[in-house]
Length: 116
Length: 393
Image: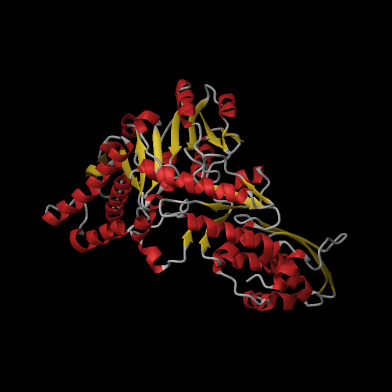
């Protein structure tokens, strides 16, 4: 499960930090296991133009949120709304056990909830 | 105590010889005798209890009630002071629903959600205040308890051994002081009953709760002990069949305790299995079990303390070991351990407020029992070392 790509994304997460006066300032949490993240995003012409995250979470959650931020920049809101569990897992590229599913999906769920 | 022989009694280790099961604080594995007792009940003695007048029904009733007797004897209680419930959680909910008392509630910061939420609900319903006793070095602080208890305290609900830290709390002192203030004491023994001999008369707690599944018994059967005179005053928790003396259109007379708290068909097979579990533990001897568990825990503690970057939360003398790493999230640690066939628990162990107080996102907990070997400990330590290495980039 902990392939080099995942570990790299965990130790050097992409698109971290925050944005000044973002259009979206979102918080996601899996309280029972201790994953916590913040997402900041700007929207322009119906598209997500910029996104940053701050994750205090496990490797699976941090890596998948990093991948998410890399993938969604430039997508339209409709396109993001179509992204689902299978998409996230395919991008993550590892087998995720049922108990870790919420770790892998926290970023995507938080973003989709914020776009509603 | 011959571990190899004990392990042979547990079918799960035949099926999974590679498994190092160190999550017994969540639930224990089951010996053949318990599994057979449950199977045998359904094969040979299955009937409802307390109702039918035929021989089969008598045998089922006798099996169920003899389990109650066994539990009573096991903890030094009277037979009519033992109420069968589903688990510790249900026992706590039953009390919070049926026990009426004047005054406020004192809980602990380390409280498992099941010994905290039922009382928080009650406090909200009845306008009672709640205070939390602080944790000091992994135990309930006696000093803070003495500062917080006063004449307004009506009930103190604490655990004998915390499922996060694993050490015995100073319950004897707490119970004695609580009684000086005429407060009732509910003692959650979910983590102590599997490992040590309890004597409810000596402890003098007003209520004691524990689960069968953590002490080699089946899931779905648990115990509420209550002092006779207190159970007698309490209203039923649920109403229905099997708990009434007479029902007329405009009046009901309920059974005496313990039956008035056992509405509906109970978990008969579960009770039969719990009796077999207690007999199994008694055969080995609880003192031997306790000693073994402490020895394994000590070895785990010692080994973990030698690994750089790890912090052990459990104090000396704990029957389980909670720890965390500054570099590796608890779920990632547990996942690497899983890949090495080591089963541990990770997260906040149903004690979120305590983890918030400690500013921890989660911990890893290794909880041994009578079937764990030194090899299990070595496997655990090797796997933890490897996890730390993987994440040390």
